[in-house]
Amino acid sequence: MTTLTARRTGTRTLLWALLVSIVVLYAFPFAYLLLTSFKTPSDAIAVPPSILPKTWSLENFQRALDTPGVIPAFVNSISTAVLSTILSLVLAVPAAYGITRFGTLSGRVFIMAALVTRMVPPVAIGVPLVGMMGAIGLRDTPTGLAIAHTTISLPLSIWLMASFFEAVPRELEEAAKVDGCGRLGALVRVVLPVVSGGVAVTAIFAFLASWNEFLFSLLLTAVEAQTTPIVIANFQTQYGLQWGPMTALATVYSIPVILLTLVLQRRIVAGLTLGAVKG
Image 1 (spheres, one colour):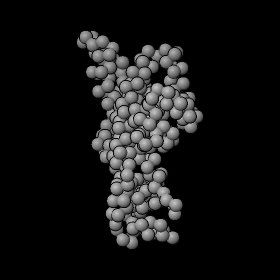
Image 2 (spheres, helix red, strand yellow; image 1 turned 120 degrees about the vertical axis):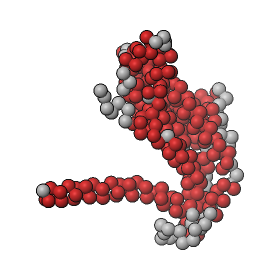
Image 3 (cartoon, one colour; image 1 turned 135 degrees about the vertical axis):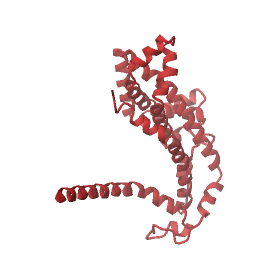
């Protein structure tokens, strides 16, 4: 008995050590980014670099936020990501619902086509999008950029929502129809509240796809709709990259995503576990 207990304790200790190592390796780049943002300009470019700041300073944050175009770019990032998320959900929810509830051959072909579209490199459609957005007058606008970002997030959104809808028993909709609801009423009043966690998960992924996107933002914007990732990449001079302001602005840019994840944490967990237990 003692030997078995010792083995279990050793296995548990090894597992925890492995998990902690993975977390440390995963979190170290962001931790180094955060620590660098508090360094003085000379410490940020010191060779060899140091992990902890020798002197804690907020100078990098002040320089980053005082740079012309930073605040408008931050606003553009928020508006573009929110609009792209709304577009993805508005299009993905009815598409996924129709695919899972009607079960037609065309629906299965459509969802496979969505998967293939997801596999296409964004650079392959970036250049045609530049011409299309320019032709309809949406180039260098948050709306045009949001539409472009939707092409990235929509296939994944459809796949996620389809998996969540499949976990909802059809009996719930049939009961709603007996009570007088139509198909649309059953979707809005019964199905969507059940899969609200899945909607939150899909919204998070759609928001992140737009929030972190760089290529389309580079190709489709110039001045008016420029987003924060482009501004961060522009922190350079003839002497090299401005690591201090870059890391400070990147740290600030991470805050909305972290707050959004914390606010939706319960719904995200509920969405990830939706359908895990049946019966």
